[in-house]
Amino acid sequence: MTYVVIEACINCKFTDCVEVCPVDCFYEGENFLVISPDECIDCGVCEPECPAEAIVADTEDGLEWWIEFAEKMSEEWPNITESKEPMQNADDIIDQEGKKTLLSEKPGEGDE
Image (cartoon, rainbow, N blue to C red; front, side):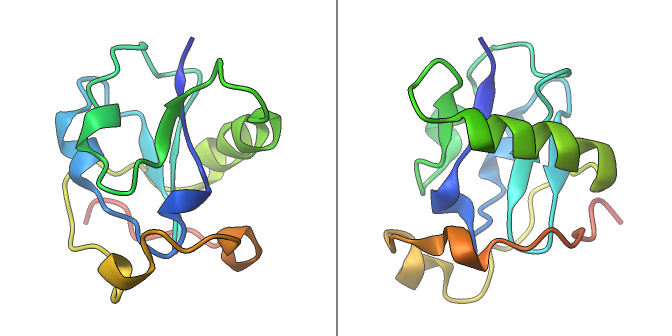
């Protein structure tokens, strides 16, 4: 089992989770984060840190697309290990549904 970031993270990108990750397995896109399934050690410390509840165990049903997306993007996006400010208006859209159409494949800044 590993953990996967799901739709709730889109256009929020809270980064509390990256600070607690002991293996630095988060990668940053323009408006989303992914967890590298090859690097995650299944410790679960990131899950309760996410205010959007966007981190779930990969054993839940219906996550195939998100797992494949994480595998692909963790090879392309920069690593992020330090917390940053969430995206503008993140608190306002944290519970918005149907955000998958807003997902960008562009890389984020990563750690600078």
